[in-house]
Length: 106
Image 1 (cartoon, rainbow, N blue to C red):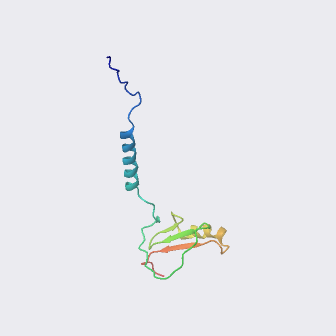
Image 2 (spheres, rainbow, N blue to C red):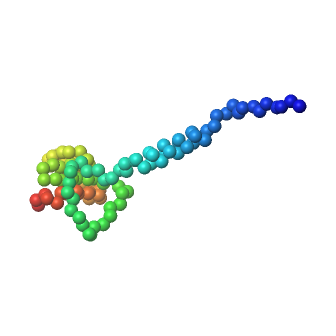
Image 3 (cartoon, rainbow, N blue to C red):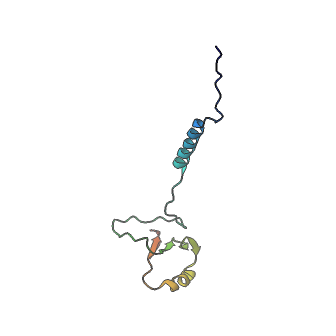
């Protein structure tokens, strides 16, 4: 009686490929740096127990003040230039977020 030859499959085994893809996925998920509130200036913000959350619906203008520097929406600038930036949005409906270093004199 003649033996039948078994045919080798022409398709590669993709099980190791799937394992590698999942390992890469887990690696990138674990090593990702999640975005936090970025400050243009190095500020020592004071802690507060009161305050209200602002809605993120409208564009928020962010002004950061340290003892020696000023930033407007993440860009370092001067106090004189901030007045020019704020005049077009002086409609009193645009939310304004002030981030002021606790060591700034007032």
